[in-house]
Image 1: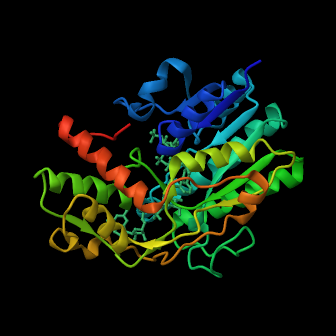
Image 2: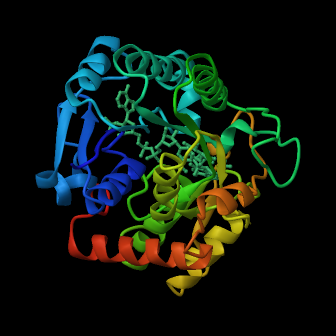
Length: 328
Ligand code: NAP
Ligand code: GDD
């Protein structure tokens, strides 16, 4: 009998890669989508005939209960969130409703319908914020620096609490930044690779950026969804840091991306103070030794290869279309 999985956030970057992985493994995949007035299924267009979509919202307890009751999944991946850090200062309450209480709603739906369902919760290295140690591990204390980071700390601890209170198989994956050609255009890697492609093709002459000194541990999203699946295949539930262990600055990202297209970034990057954040996370670098040891997880793609792949994908997309939307 095929295993059944529910994915919230299936229309997002990670949801789409996870759906690819689970479909390839023979799962029956149900994706949770919220109603929108225009189609937003671009990232999962290629597998629409192999998955089922059901409407629900993290704000709506009844819709989540209904999905869990109807599908009775073996595994539930909660990836849905307001995931763009700057937007969390604009909408701190909504961010908390989605990212914190939304997770409690998912946990309650599972607890009330079938506490045997295994849950993956998408936690974040943003929880480390103003970092207390370098590199960051599962034991590093949290010090979030944005309403987004704060909301994810609540989500992490409510997941741990339901595991300990109700003996549920609930895992919190503390994932460092992961990117791909399917990354949203507002995140810095994709903003840069899309900007490079536009400049190379004569569609733009510069890209505006904020803090070039911030450092992130960037990996490939396809590798990170494999870690999510592995977490739900163990004998015991646990929490894991997933990271490459290599950190680069935004300046280095820009150098690599423009360099790959044969461009000099100094001629095309403008620093825009309006893009600086009220409080910044300066430097993230993760230690994924536990994930490597217990899950047997390894990242497969270097930073340079990842950025080159993203630039090439944006060049191909923009060269062959009017340039709207996200690449598959
Ligand atoms: P993403 O591309 O922004 O996708 C977010 C998804 O959440 C979309 O499918 C969105 O649906 C959905 N969503 C948002 N609010 C919802 C609601 N109220 N009800 C139902 N669905 C809702 O994000 P991502 O990069 O794939 O990240 C996936 C998860 O991992 C997020 O929880 C994020 O916070 C976390 N995370 C990401 C990273 C990273 O580097 N990518 C690192 C650590 C943790 P619409 O299409 O309708 O907007
Ligand atoms: N987005 C953006 N746009 N970021 C910029 C820009 C810009 O123009 N210029 C500099 N940056 C810097 C930001 O200040 C930040 O330090 C860094 O680039 C990365 O920003 P994002 O790509 O927006 O990602 P993030 O690190 O804030 O958050 C992402 O990773 C988290 C995991 O650490 C998101 O995917 C979160 O959902 C995720 O939890």
